[in-house]
Length: 170
Image (cartoon, rainbow, N blue to C red; front, side, top):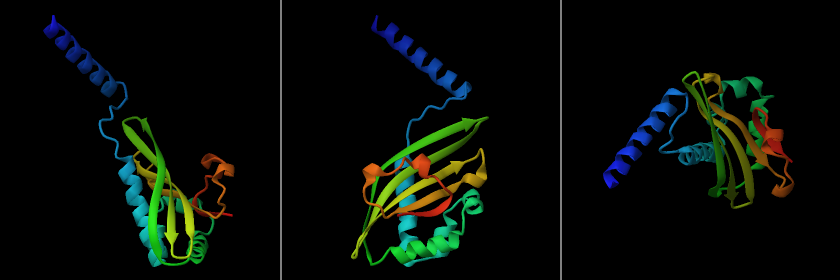
């Protein structure tokens, strides 16, 4: 009786995997969104620590650069506000989502991190299209927000704050 249950279980697993693959679904065995958020956070930290506007700007998607208002001045304002030598950079939680259309996919990671210098702490929020084969011009950072306002409980939802480029929330 045990081998009959084993064969039935294997058969059902094969049917499930096959139907997911052929009905547009995707079986996720390993989700690396956490490490993708860490990599992007490191790239942002590096650009901010060196006050390298070209490096920071290169992280943004073509769509974000096209839609943002005066990204050069916003980057310079961010560099002006973040003072001191970086002591630590800690990411809070993250959320990710994926869309699949016609065999193409778009993966978005949203996360916050705190950058601490010898002068103060700075809260950032990032919306990053880490992969987008549906609309390739979306791939890259869409929004980098510096939050000077410290009462996180009273912040609007990220969807209401969403805008292209660098944004400083006061």
